[in-house]
Image 1 (spheres, one colour):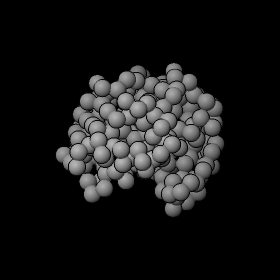
Image 2 (cartoon, helix red, strand yellow; image 1 turned 90 degrees about the vertical axis):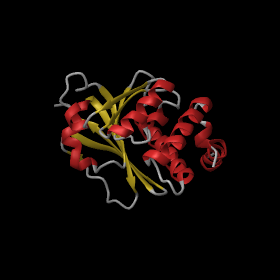
Image 3 (cartoon, helix red, strand yellow; image 1 turned 120 degrees about the vertical axis):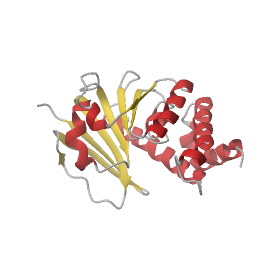
Length: 212
């Protein structure tokens, strides 16, 4: 199926969410995913339209949660851990304000795909690395106002390793299945729960790095 009808179908499903995004850049993003998906398995091969639409909605809703805690400006630096096809980090750069996003991807083939996106879309940097390793790098340590993951891992399992990426008072933003249990009030690495929302099939959680 050609890309344009599938992009139009994604727009029909996502509705107002799609309309909040930069239209030209969003079509570039979706075209790249759909073109590479069969080869790389970035999202479902059976029903990519439904999966992409769900991930777009989750990405925008997670950004809204970040904004609810304090409106970030275009200078905020974001680290997206394990973005795969670019969710949520690439989607965040299609909103306004558009943050600077570093996509941290450990899988080489997906990093190559993301590098291609970064040549076509602004405000993106790609680093092929383990997030835990990058957290010890002086060039990344304490650099980010927001670190995000979209159902990549349980934040409780890796918070201690990745929290050094955050600037003081930086936010860890995560969304997982609504079927997961309530978020703990504290995580390793000096992370305190500051927000939790359950909507449809997603549990949206914000932690803030505390001083010390």
